Amino acid sequence: MVTLDQPIARWLGGYQALGFWDTALDLLEWVLLLPLVPWAFAILLALAMLVTVAVPRWRGFAPVATYLTANHLLGRIAMVYAKDWTGRLRPSEWLAQGGDTFWRTGGISFPSGHVVLFASVVIPVAVIWPRTRPLLAVVAFVAAARVVANAHFVSDVIGGVTLCAVVAWVTGWIVRPLRR
Image (cartoon, rainbow, N blue to C red; front, side, top):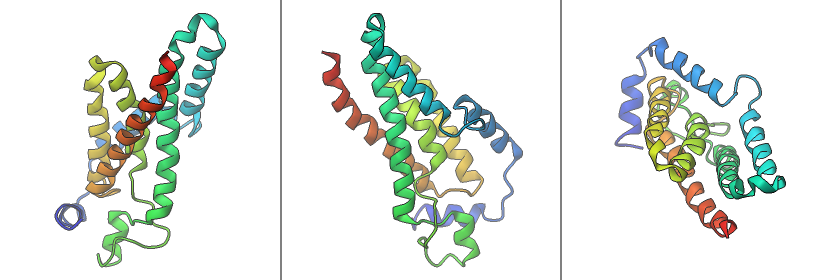
């Protein structure tokens, strides 16, 4: 927090981010249907998982659908609880309060929700289909967009990616036996 978060937040404190970052992020949000219903993509994943379990001909896809659904749902739920537990201020809030402490009641910066939303989809897809690994650039872009907008500290976006990677690893061990 001292070596990266503070200097970068102070440096970006007076910077007005280009509209490109927000516009591109708004377009990416449509991929997950966030502007329609915040949980729409998670609901679609859950429905797809149920269909693969219910239709005998598609049952071979059930572990993949379960893995994708579990990652997205567990990542989002863990993110909500982590935000409540940590109470971390956003960089703009931190600067407005004089930069004395990162933690206050009501802070919701850690981990980055946008990063978790995208990483909880992209990381499991990259694990299942290695040729899709270039999609990890989407997660990197979202992380950069949130830092440049001074909406998150660098450690917030790293925490979001780490959370999703851990969830992907754990759910991989849980879902793996389902393939038998």
